[in-house]
Image 1 (cartoon, rainbow, N blue to C red):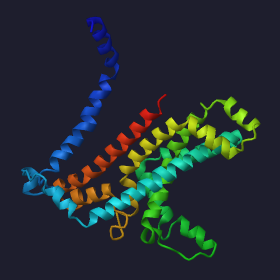
Image 2: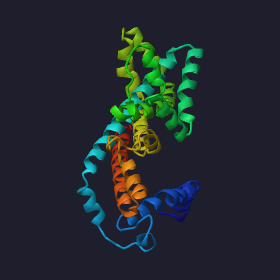
Image 3: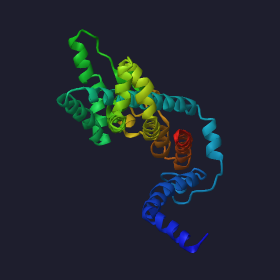
Image 4: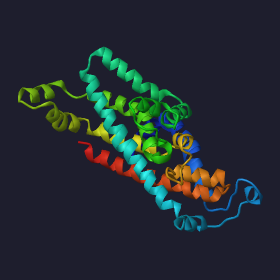
Amino acid sequence: MPASHRTRQVLRYLPVLPAVVLLLVFLAGPVLWAFHASLTNAGLTGRHARNPEWVGLDNYQRLLQDPVLPLSLALTVLFVAGSAILGQNVLGLALAVLMRRARPVVSATVGTAVVAAWVLPEIVAAFAAYAFFSRDGTLNQLLGRLGVPETDWLYTVPMAAVILANVWRGTAFSMLVYRSALSGVPGELTEAAQMDGAGAWQRLAFITLPVIRGSIATNLMLVTLQTLAVFTLIWVMTAGGPANGSTTLPVMAYQEAFKFGDIGYGTAVATVPILIGAVFGAAYLRLLREQRP
């Protein structure tokens, strides 16, 4: 390979070098530290906080025997599937399609209302959701006017409450992604299908969705990984309760590390969603590569 060609290749990657360095420092660095800590008996306080000892895979053996792990895994899958894959993705696409057909005033109003929940700080959105679903909250007050008995939603159906709250907060991202994708659908294709007698659902299923399938895969990957890491919303609303009824993997890791003071075991728990996210990311990236012409 000529030296000039190698030089051009190096220069082509120089603009992304700062981003790569930042990712290595602020993303790969903490991940590697967490994996290292999971192989020790590091504690939050006490002797093991100053001088942690190497324990190898003991934390992972303990994790496999932990009775909370299967429940936490199931709740994490339920939370991601319900609030990201089905909730945010489907609702975001539906809003994007409807807003394209609505009047400008209606579209702007709906868009502003949906985006408002997304731009709120997560802690503020979490307290707002807690105030809505709590026993004395807005939902019970509205249902009380209809004669519906008062229900403690955060106690009886905690996962349903946090799933709906996360859908409310995160749908705006999917809506914006799909609005941008729909603007790239050639108008002549939908017009030709309409002239051939295709209905609205047929145009959506056989023209619009195939055209934007790349955006669908990208959005699925992003909202899945983002939802997999949600902690603040669940912790503020339910703190993982009642009786571990909403203890997803991030909540379980936080409890073990900072509530019980076992940093080593807590980071071992935290590696599980990291591995799950890596599997999801690899699957979506492979799907994107297969969709390239």
